[in-house]
Amino acid sequence: MAEKETKLREPMGDEDVKRWQTVKPLREVAPDKVPALGESPVMAWIRRRRPQDSSTFIEQKLNYKKLPLSVKYRSCNTRHLKEIGDFRTAVVEVFGEAGYKLVDDIYRSYGPVEYRNAVARGLIKPGGNCTPAEVASYLCTVYDIQNFSIKITEVSDERVRVEMYVGLPVMCPYDVRPGDFRLCDATGGMEKEFTKLCNPKLRMRLGKCKAMGDDCCELIIERDPTVE
Image 1: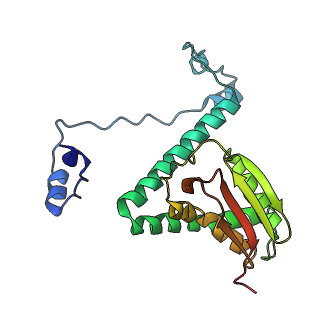
Image 2: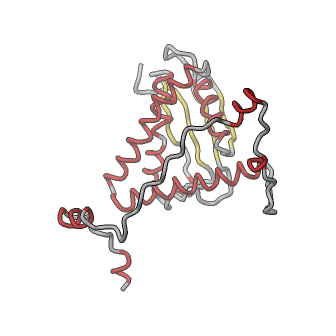
Image 3: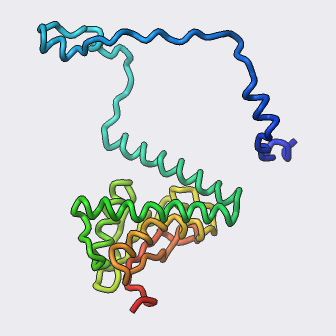
């Protein structure tokens, strides 16, 4: 029974698709009648001073708890991290090498987009001559928006170290399985591509990793020793 429950469903074959496409509905459903083009409430007021329909401003009768914006923000972000974390963790567990490549390709594709947006908004200077501190400053702003806990442990002309999620939780909020450093490294694809576009002589790498038992996840922006 256990094997039957965990077995992945086979993809639909050609015959299955044909049968699905020829299934007739239980009853014929008449299309909804499209209403005649009317006039918006705002234009009715401008043209004829017609009062707004009070039904559009019905007071909320349901008494529910309204949380502060900061609480909503943290709650939504935590759920966001869990959802994308569980999906990408499952991808590599199910598909193995192909899963790692998929995650790496996806996250690397974000790098050029992030870079173009940052330059267009004046947040990163163009020309490929950014310092490690300039690259790290931008990334830390991105992480702060996502509610990452941030701790800067080193800032120099050669290197910047950024620690995230120091201490608790024991595992990372993305639910990466223990020992899977490759998945963490693959999800750093955006930062790797972004850093190279900011300055080809720099690189991003992961130092510490909660999935490997460290007390934090560490991002390092530094001079690339392989580039002269």
